[in-house]
Length: 255
Image 1 (cartoon, rainbow, N blue to C red):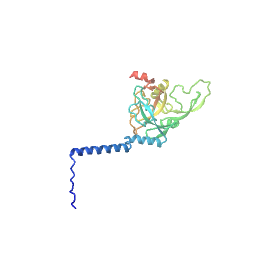
Image 2: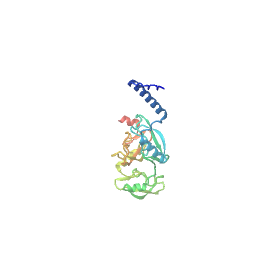
Image 3: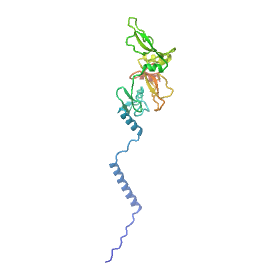
């Protein structure tokens, strides 16, 4: 039996090769898109902060912010960290809600503990003493930078309170011993409807009672140089311009 001659395969020309490769590539891409999950987010840092929030007892939520440069999971232990003048465009950020009496310090949920005023007095150079007071409702370690804070009408019964004696030229403003100059700003805050409080700051050179009408005066990149400052909290729609509480509208007109 005579064998069939071997049939030679005609080589594929370059044009046909390109078409074939293009078709195969298209099929591969379609298969990948159909069967593969979406790429993970690039922000490993945000993922780590989200987990840190959850691990320390917080809940991840979203909130509105209008301070340019504020990132997800910002330090909400800081006063006014995400509240700037209303004309700045607002945007959504992820926030760690730590629940009542707690806040997220940029790394974990921490408690907002009541300050130890006796220790604060000693740490800031004061001496704990006792004094007589006849103003109903006045508590230990009251703000003795305020004129007449413990001197009311003589008909009120007097009682003893613990006092922080800060020495000459200084007074206890309810949180620490300060110079009378700082106490003037504390009084200006109170007189204009604000509340003196404290908050962490990590912007070098920022002083007590800084201007909260300026965007981000105390919110620099996270770092180890965080320190406590006295702040005037003027409430909703108001800010402290360095001398008194004013409305955001008035603050913008001054600029």
